[in-house]
Length: 190
Image 1 (cartoon, rainbow, N blue to C red):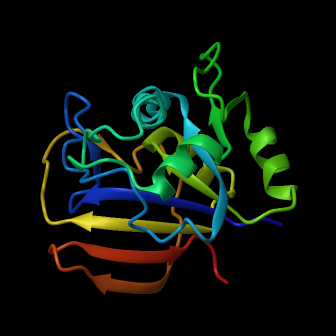
Image 2 (cartoon, rainbow, N blue to C red):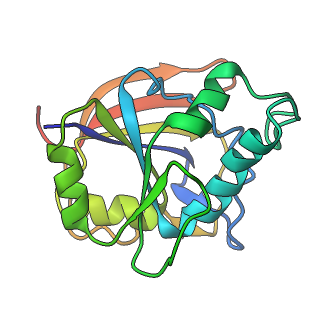
């Protein structure tokens, strides 16, 4: 069975976005978690899909252009990711996507079926509603966080829709040069 890894950047107070939906504390949408070699499929929630799709389709539309978050042209690896990595979007409301690598899935049974397929890990990119739904159904195997040294104070909490307690097991942590902490947790006992 494939492992499902939810990987997110969060501030110290666990607010996944600011009070008006701001994501400005996220430095880039690259791979700070080291998942490129581990995962071959990504999973998004419908709420996050729009901005994520716009970012990566802009990479394909202008591969020599300047990326919005980084201020530099995309790398060959980023272009390949945008063009070839399958993405599944869990949504009951979206009617279609505009990105050729994105496929809509309508329920968590489809995610269970995806976990049963052959392949490497599934990278659950987010957002908060998706991660909560996956955790509530016991589908998350590992959580990876980049914890940014900032407190938003208000906004959307990452775990606001998680039902009941979920004991996590720390697998490792690392202090990054930027003052961030990278932390890995098993969502259930290994």
